[in-house]
Structure formats: C-alpha cells, structure tokens
Image (tube, rainbow over all chains, first blue to last red; front, side):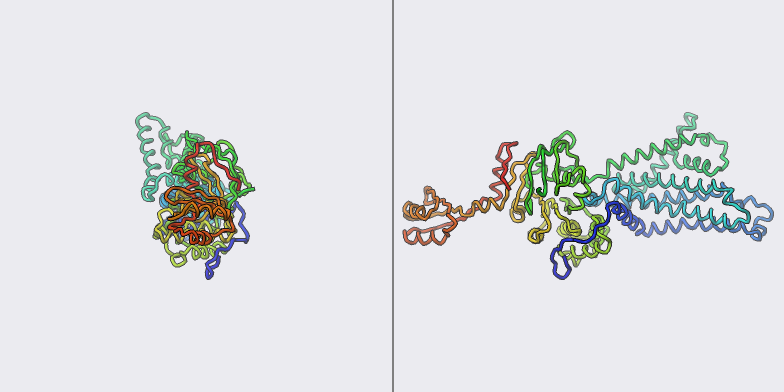
Length: 291
Length: 313
C-alpha cells in the first residue's frame, strides 16, 4: 500500500514478539484512562493531602518550627506508624474514587462498542486482555497510593535527625504491602464490575455500591446477631484492620478489630475469585455465539 | 496443504451441534462461505480464529492447528467481523494503528500502514474523525482497513457488504477484487448474498445445518459450462439442427423452436448465425448460459443432508 498509489502492498517488515502485545494493550488502556480531564483532576486532588502530609513531616523534623508551633507539646507532630496509617487511608479512598472513574473507561467502552471480537482476533488471549487492563489500572492507582506514601517515608527518613528508617522499616513494608493488596483488589473489582455494566456512569456508581452496601448489611448483621463476623462484609473496615496490623498500629478495643488476618485474606481472595469468574464469563468474543 | 483443512470438525454450542463433521480442504485464492442463516458460517469462522474449541476433529489454517497454534494463526489472519466492532472514541487512524500494533507491527510501521490502509479503502479524508461518527459504510470500510493493515496472509470477511448501499457495496466488492488480484492474500468471505460470492470468489463452501452441502471450484464449473447455449428460432428448425450437428455440436430440439446445444471450442456463435442465414431460419434469442452459483447453491440445498458434493479442486 502506498498513500499516493492506493495500491495494496504486503507487509514484509519485522514483527514484535508475542509477549509484547499485552504491553500494547496496556499502553493504549493507560492512554485511554488518562485522556480524561476528570482523571487528571482526581490525580491532582490526590496530591493535595500528600502536600499537607509532606509539610507536616517537614515541620515535625524542624526544631524551630516545632518550637514555634507546638510550644512543648509534640503529640500533634508525631510522625509514626499511626501517621502513615492516616496517609495510607486517605490515599486509598482517593484510589477508590479513581478506580470508580477509570475502570469503566477501560472495559465498558470496549463492550459497548463490541470491540472484543476484533481485539481478540489478534494474537492476544482473554487473559492477556484482562491482564493488560489490570496493568493500566494498577499502575494508575500506584501513582496515588504506595508511590507517594513511600516517597513520604523516604523523606521522613531523610529529614529525621536520628536514623529513622532502620527502626521503622515495618512501616515502609506495611505501607507498600497494604497499598498493593488494596489497589490489586480495587483493580480486579473495578474491571469485573465494569465488564458487566455497559454504561460508564452506572458502572462508576456500582463500584461504590458494591463496596458500601455490603458494609451496611454487615453492620446490620453485626448489630442483630451480636457477632464480629458481620464486619467481613465491610471491605473498607477489613482493609483498615489489615493496614493497622501491617503497620503495627495499636488497635482500638473494638469487636471488629479482633477479626483474624487469615479471615480477612480469605474473604478478599473469595471476592477476587468471584471477580475473576465474572470477567471469565463476560470477556469473550460474543459475536461467535450467534452461529 | 490447503489454506484451510477440516477433518471431521464438530463444534457444539450449549446443547446444539452447530458444526457436524466438516471434512474438506479449501485451496482457493478467494473462498466463499455460503449457507442459510444458522448453517454455521460464523461458527466456522470463530472456530478458525480459536474462539471455539472443537468437540471432535481438527481444523488447520496454513497447517497450524486451531487449538494448539492459536496465536500463530491469529498472527496471519485479518478479521473483519459481521457486526459493528470498533472503539468509538478513537480516531480512525489511531484505531487502525492500534490494531496493527496488536498484530505485531512496530509503532512507526503501524502508524504508516494505518494511513496507507485507510487511503486504500477510501477513508483517507476522514481518518482523523472519531470512528463513532462514521456512517455504516465507513464503519464497514474501517473494519476492512484494520484487517488489512498488518498484511495478513488470510483475510476473513464476515458479511462484508452487510447494510451497504449499492454504491458502497460496489466499492467494497471492487476493493475485495483488487486484494484478490494482488495475490499475496487468501480470502475467506462469508455471505448470504450469492452475488457477492459469485463476483469475488473462485471456490465456494456451502454449509447446510452444520454440514458441508457442497465444496466447489466456481471457476472450474464456469469453464465446463462455457459453451452451453440456448437459442429460440423461427423457421426450419429440424434442418437447422441437423446442420449444427454436422459442425460437431451436441444438440437437442424442443417444441416452439427452442434448441439447446453444447458447442465445441472451435465453433463460435457467429457460425450459428451463418447457418441460420443459409437455412432461412431466424434466431430470435440466444442465451450463453453459465451454471451460475445460484444453481450450485440450490442443488446443494436440495441434496440430502450428509451427502456432500465434493469436487476435486
């Protein structure tokens, strides 16, 4: 083919390795996610708390500022596990908002335009397709969760007059592991729900609903049956318990806090298996069924 | 080795057997896939693309097994689905480039070929518009462009003229003919429109109820019936028939002055007019009849299920 002759010409050039096709899908998905102004606005918004937390770390490690602001009472400017727990919680809620906005953009539009038969007719598997979308969403969420959290952790280590990182390594590891579990869960959940709802706005609402409606039901179950297991339906609460334990934050004397980590992990794993089953049922070249 | 080899291929969807023991070798440059609705055309295409697992038997494309070598097969195929299938919020050129990259072209090459493919199918002027704003004909053409951009060895077109107006249909047929003429791409065209297959294909696979009803080389069929002629005469028909037989034609006369004859290769229609003039016979009508695809199709549909007509290709 050539533009001026309008003739067809066979392609005889190089072909990229098969494994790189997933990266092509991920790259286009990433571009699609960030082509929205709302995504950029949410990302910018996610930086505001980080700036505030950064300033607090600066002040906490500056003797003059401490003297001027806290006047002997340093409790408000303590940078410890609880402080990083707050950072992680704040950023995780922003990650949820970004998931609710971005995930439907990655999958719903492919489904509403019936793009799967064309996409899957290329050398890419259904797993490869979902994995590529997962990479795009996971990396977007990383930019607002563990990456800024670990940067703050590193800054605290740098600013602290005493050797700080060595003694608080659990915080860094906890922040990383806790954030990765949360955003991996959010990514799978967001993609699974988006694959079942064609309309983007409805998909966005569904992601919030699926997290918070069962939390309400769990609260009712807990109250009526006087059991702590109802909290297993409350994903944000379960994550909060998990993060506390990972970061080594002292927990409240609260019934839900005594839920074993293994139960939380099993619950999250079950939710992920359900999401994978939903994706497996939905991500198909549907046109073929007509026969 | 053919383009597509089928060996007892059986595909089941739910409780229904959609493809039932398909066996045959397709070797044509442009293969037509014909059959009534529900015959299994789209299912066969989907199986070749690896979307369905055969229950029994095998299917091979360029000697690659559809189950084991799915990626290699898809690497060599360009697929234009029947229904709308695109990414609406992308521009035409970005969409085709995306598909070309997925098919394995490096980024630069993919962009270059996306532009070329869009110009080739006639969408050059609208390539920066979002695909969702395209008309139905344009959407068909962009599906063709994305199937062509990476230079496949086999182009699978599922109902390529679906929903097109006559001008757009003619344009599509013309493009398909050009691709076929260029020679580097084999075509598998599924259609329920006999005319489309007749104009573009040299081999036809007719499916009925999931079985092969006929597998024919259309070109061979045409050649074998090239000299079959029907004429309608007024005057001394018997004497005229006798003279024609003397020329070496096989001839049969019917009431009303109708004559059917098969002419040897060295005889032309002009010779018939000369004889008619000598005999004082008027030739009122002359049909040089071809065994049309419609005849092949109708015969295949009349055949008993399970007794496919195979013609060596």
